[in-house]
Length: 388
Ligand SMILES: Cc1ncc(COP(=O)(O)O)c(C=O)c1O
Image (cartoon, rainbow, N blue to C red; front, top):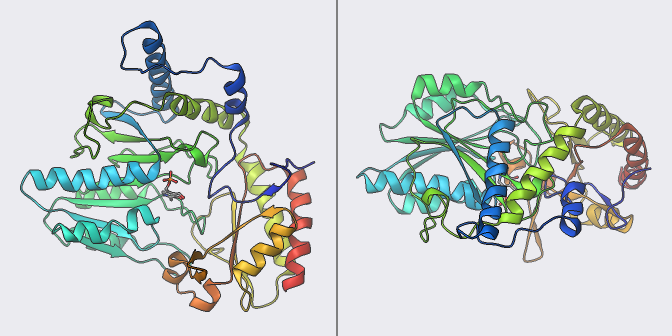
C-alpha cells in the first residue's frame, strides 16, 4: 500500500520533500535545542554540541578532506547567492572584477544573479545545452578561458526539472585546464542519484538544501575550500567563523543529520531506479504518438524524475485533473499573473513555447518501492489516458 501524505499522493519531490520520519519523531520526543549556541552556559553549549555533531557527520558522510569548511544557511538560494556574490565582492575588494560562467538551465537562484553581477561591472558568460540537456565540455572550457579575470564556474550536478545528471568527473579536466574556481549546485543530488555523497574535490564549493531530502525548510549547508575567495553577505555577530553571521537554526541544522541518516539506512538506488522505470514504461504505453518523455537520451538521468511533454495540452488543466484525483504533480511552467510561462530549461533544450507549456513533471521519493510504483502507475495512467 502506497504511503499517502495528508491523504494525498505526493509526486513533487524535486520541489520539496515531506519531513523524514526521524525528524517528525524527534520533534515531540526529542530534546529540542532552544539555546543560543554562542552562549557559554550549559544550555548554549548543548546546542553547540549538536551543531558540531552535525558538522562532523556531514564531513564523514561526504568524506571531506582537510582544507574544506562547512557552514549552514537558510537554504540553497541564500547559500548560492552568498558564495557567488561573496566571490565577486571579495575579488572587487582586491581591485578586480570577476568572470562568472554558468549554464542556461541553472536554477533561478544562479541565473537571476547575472544582471546584478553585470551592474557591478563583472563579466557573465552563459553556456547552452543540447536537446537532451547535456553540455559540451569543450564549449565550457573555451568560455572559461575567454577572460583573464578571476573566474568562477557554477556547475549544476542534477537538474531539478529534467533530472539530467552532469558528470562530476569532468570537473577534474576543467580545473586542470582552466584553473577556475568551481561551485557545484548539489541541491538535487541527495537520494536521487546513486553516488550522491561521492564529491569531486576539484570543485571548491558545494551547496545542499535540507528541505529537498526530508530535513526542515529554511536550512541548508555549503562546503567551501578554505582558500576560496569569499566575503560573507551576512555581516553581524561573526557566527560560523564569520562565514554566515546570525544565530544558527540549531533544530534545523540537527534535522539535516537526522534526515540524512534515514536516507543512508534505507536507500536502495537499484530499487528506486527499477520502480521509476516501471512507472515510466506504463506512462509510455498510454502516451499519444506526439507526446514524449524529456531527456531519455541524455548521457545520464537521475532515478526519481519523469518529465513529460503533451503537445496540444495545457499544464494547468493537466495539473488540475491530477489534483482532483488527489495527486500532487508539477508543471515545467511558471505561473505569473495568471499566465503560464514556458520553462526556461525546456526552451533551452530547443522545445517550442507551445510544447513547453504542456510539460508535466513527476518526481518521487528515494524510498519508492515496486509495490508503490504499480499503484502509482495505475493512478497516473488513468488520468493520462483521458488526455492522450
Ligand atoms: C537545483 C536547485 N538549486 C537551488 C535551489 C534553491 O533551493 P532552496 O529552495 O533551498 O532555496 C533549488 C530549489 O528548487 C534547486 O532545485
